Image (cartoon, rainbow over all chains, first blue to last red):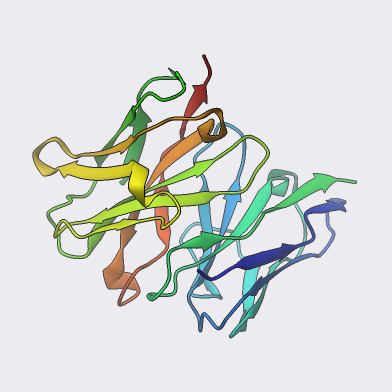
Length: 108
Length: 124
């Protein structure tokens, strides 16, 4: 299976900060990478798919980049609604779906 | 509008078999390319993919849990059922079902719509 390693595990930031979360795959996953946002009691939300494509309705302050084995999720200007846990996920066709360990974005 | 909702027991005893149902609307599991998967999250831990079933009855399972899982669909009821045998306290967590469509990826794909999840506690 492809292992996904996310960093950091926790990130403390203030409103308006630029935030970057990194995800590394144990082998190349080409562009088969998605990012999700999880909040307690709510349905997980797809933010980004295919590394950098923004899901409909997701604010443009979210962006994704990377290729091969290293990927990033960036929030350009952190907003109060963005405090949550973020997960990357690979969906390489030849491997079971796997997620990163998650990054908790908390208020500084 | 696609919606999914998980239902099932909130408590299970060790060694029991858990049955969870995902009831969905806004799409059909008879449409080519469509799939419904199950993902869980133990308290304080990461998401873990469990299983997925496609419109053509193709089924995928997590290799580590394959012997304990069965996924089925009832297209007429718009439901997908997941059964997990030999429940253990380590299986405690929130269980989510989610929609996927391999037409968007040309193969196994991301999950674009999720249910709110069902919390299952395994305890004697």
